[in-house]
Image (cartoon, rainbow over all chains, first blue to last red; front, side):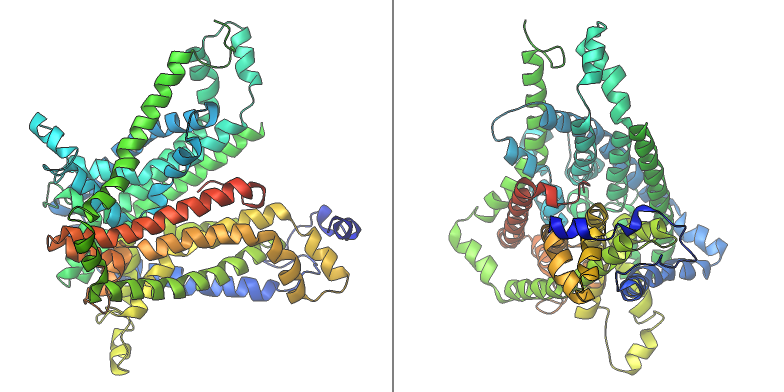
Length: 294
Length: 279
């Protein structure tokens, strides 16, 4: 294979400015077919259906939109969804950084198992996570039977939402921070030690600034995932209007009452926040790339 | 005190490891163990009753069917998208990559809602579908569509960076030696990306079989007909039939464990043949 690769024409060394969405002269076939299919599938599955939300919302008119999407109950649901997602993302920021640090820097027994376990929230269906967490934190559960007598109610309370969202978001932080931490050379830390810095000062002033873009990206990813999360939350939340009702659940309830316009207006509001989060994540990643490039 | 200046004192290391492991155990380990403990709480008999009941079997069949349609379609899409993006230069490539990732930032509930707006009775295509006696929402096609949407980026986002890293030299060499485009793909590209492809399929499948929110919106929850395994779990749980709910949940938890083991094996054995990006 290497012999063939060496004798092959090194065509793409000189980069030509691409013409209008067109290919540069290439001997590789299938450009039209692969890009055509990609765009077709993207439009049919993602773009056209998503545009339905905004077209339907636009047809609603401003007054109706405000009445539905910014009603007292909806505002309470956003507050809970965004607040709990932000709190969970921050908790994951702290513990995710710690887990990434421990996985990269230290050796301990069963490290490979622990490493695999970190991805559990990606692999375990949200409904399964939801009923398992509820069983744990319910007043007769393993954790609940200890917490509830001490006045800490998790299941069927807003705190339960935070617990579920923390479960869902952890791997985003760990898997974003881990590679950056692993790629970081020891030389800068050695230099800091030579100059007399203790480990804490080195971490705060050398390591943390280097991994900050990755850490913030991970926190933003965890937040974005948590805001829209549904399956793991509804079992543990209790779902009381104004108190422990998340925004996605409000959409489902509007749908169950055949109030499509109401469901759509709330969905559009959530989508706008999601896209803002996506934009922020892209900016953070660009910042991270610039950091590592220099 | 002869430790290296770039590591921490022993007690600090042990304390950090203990806190990290404690957090993982509490947050991830306990819920996983709880699924199996609750499922076998009343012994193996009630567990088997829960798993073998006709509605549960119908849910398993539907889940397999939906994943069996959604995953292959997203594999074809992922390969096509990665081929176009990695092997050619064109404008707005980064916009395309961002759009492919879009479904990840949409709430599952909204992912289901968009198809209700399109194909539901009050939706754009609703009257037409009704006139032709076809049903998408509250039926299997809607469940398949919603599942395709939520698993849309998995294969593509694994293959795109991988094929970009691998470049075009090998394909160009094969083609210049006279191989056809299809033969080049099958005998040069495919062997290069097979482990990455498997990795993407694995994650795509786990999500496809476990999706709850999006499927819940479009399913209609008709027992034995439009209930996937996660929806069946919800119904059993809301009926206070905890043993059966956790019994079916233990099947999905088992799937998650298999997914994690295979994923770890791939990362351990073929790290250099996977895309470097974390998920």
